[in-house]
Length: 146
Ligand SMILES: [Fe+2]
Ligand SMILES: [Fe+2]
Image (cartoon, protein in one colour):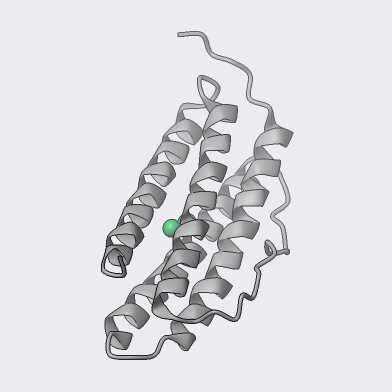
């Protein structure tokens, strides 16, 4: 296997993009969890709060890697659109869209670290696995709505 040189500034830029996106996820899921109404409120609020905590954990992990690479973690969050649509279906669809975008960011990271850093490659793959799992969960939750 050929070991490539890691492009630290590119990797830090992608990690910062991930960090900003995950921080936006904290805001999005917290907002969503407050907007749920109806008979299925309780399990969905629990799920959304878990996703908010998970996003914070993911943002912190990306931040730690940035610091480890001598980069500077961002103070910004990615832009979130307020759609003013708060039916459970809308909330879950927005969540799914969010997870798929997160997934694409981790895939972008994987592309920049493959064969250049075993640790970062493992990290990217693990995160891709987690975000895929979240997307599948959301897809399953959306099935009910036809
Ligand atoms: Fe995440
Ligand atoms: Fe996620």
